[in-house]
Image 1 (tube, rainbow, N blue to C red):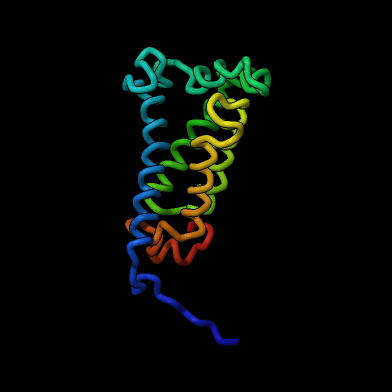
Image 2: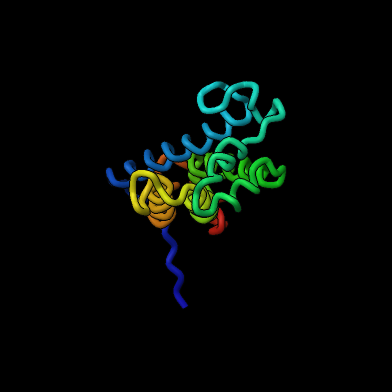
Length: 169
């Protein structure tokens, strides 16, 4: 059996690779910023008094507002649960950091898509479209980033550690 070895560090990058990389970093920043603002309450989406570090719940505002929606009873019941807060915040941090660093994009695509689809379901029925919103678009892009190996450009996806451990790609 012949095994072909490709050194990804020597592969040339196309403009499309850079577009995927910028998309990856940009969406990563959206996730990471949500984590930071909810943790510290910097006043963009989360006032200081509602910061996670001040005892606020990062899930209460969004999930309590879903009470009138189709699945609102289920989602509003999750609002403020400590385990839901922790899973949500770890998800925001992990997805954001993974995207910005360009590592673990397969895991990021799955976990990020799961988070986004749950947020999408919490808002059903949508106010401005029968089924499509930014949660679904971001999910599609996350999957595209993983399939395009977008961590290999402007990220650590080409590093030897990542290449030796496929689960980190």
